[in-house]
Length: 346
Image (cartoon, rainbow, N blue to C red; front, side, top):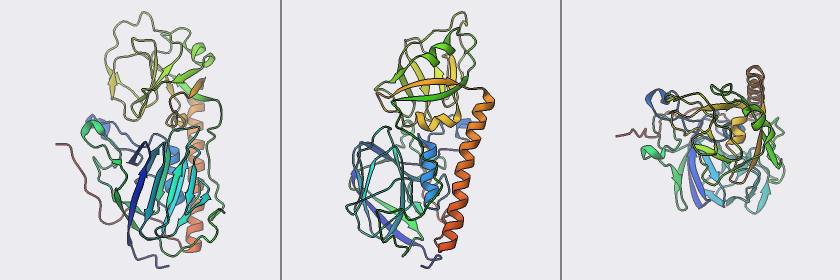
């Protein structure tokens, strides 16, 4: 293997699932300009996929939402698939998720039968050739930047991966400390902390923690619309439009609960009765229509500690991957010298 030589790889998509897009971890500082940060709905799965193939956490990758996704690559590639449980088949051989996999040139890779959650993440060792808007490949359809992948699309990949083989595809290439989320519960428990109108909505704590809510069919990257009991705040008067965080629980005038996602509008005038703890946001990003969930209240201190622990596990995985890849001569990837075009709004 020559770690200094870059090679150009063409990835040909033959099946694109229900909705597949380029993704990364979103736009930095874009919200100061009135543009949502966007990015992968399940940031934990996306970051882990990139770590497993030696990329930086925020490198471009593909987000696959349901159906059948298939591709071939013109040369050998090094990939990982994370997210909700699914079947991953390489050249007719089932392989595991949440691990790096060597794929020989022109071998068909199929990702299908996603279950429990909503999204899978496919990372390639290297840098995908995808256009950027405000520094990110993440879709922003309201600005005319959909980033949708379709059957027949050919995607370029700058990769240093060469010649590192995996003789038994059905067996893990490495043993790595991967923090794999559990999507199997019938009712997901989402941790929440108080919001600006929690105190002004008597009974909301007991209602959210004692009820089961169902994700409705109109949910998307902007937010989840939940069917279930709500309490409307009383005596608050008119709420002036204000900034809203990712994970905000809004109660609009209708009888529904909305949890805002990464592509939310940045301001709103609805009461915010709770906010999802940051460590629970990846699980919310996997919630499909029909998913049932309930809520558990945490103190701000406990929510911060959960987030820190999640990040500690990712850092431990990064450290292990770096030392292991260095030992076997597999190069880690940084941003390439030439960047894809940055598409600006007109």
